[in-house]
Length: 343
Image (cartoon, rainbow, N blue to C red):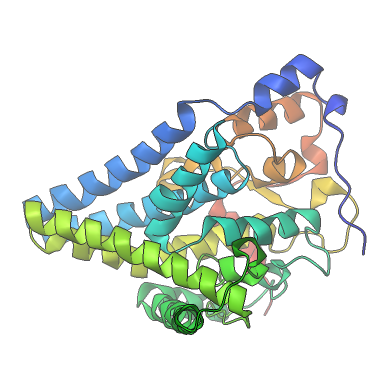
């Protein structure tokens, strides 16, 4: 099937407006990365200092949202939008965001651009995320339980480390491949969730090597965080970080994935129907919708716009009477009601 139709920006912006809205700021992206880390460190640090189990629970709730935020900011870097300097953009996306949650920027970029090219078409590599919906409420609750009990995290990491071991074996045998050839699926199993939350794709040797490098970066970041935790407060801050990664991060990631495309039109050639925008209050922004990721329809319409300008694009589309053509949900709760309408 042909790639999805792109909207010409000059239908909505004059040339000066478009240049201004798509030019990445030199400070805004790095500040968002710093913000995600500052909030995470403060949450686990204060909880450890308090020694209060209720504070520990609150920290896990908060840090999971910032871990999703780091994944979102890696996504920004995949589009080249975290910083106008490409090397700095890639460093921020690879080491300071993606590595923290076990993702590889380059493999993810290859995969994700395929998703934009064929959004909600049969060739869309993300179609498996939305295809099972609507589902039953019981099915969704089973997934929530797997997320919050760490089962999703464990299955994903076992698969990831298995691929990494195969890649390491290939490296030790001296096999050489172009790093840019990594399978598009190398970036997907560990920051995306299929219907059962336990994606385990088949990837080639190049992809396995990409996973090996991603796991190496993940372990380096975890070692730094653990060392800082032991130096300052003992084990508690790191264990809270790890608990967030294994539980609330998985749940928030699932809800975010559902909200973006589930129960939107599949196979349509109308770009206004491919993704959903969901209005988010402060609780949603702290958990499932960090850093304007809820403006997902706008992101698909104009993927060259940095996340911190998507709200302005949404307002502009409203002024031009385009909201009625878009899929817009009032809350994430409303989305979950819609996608569990079956049965």
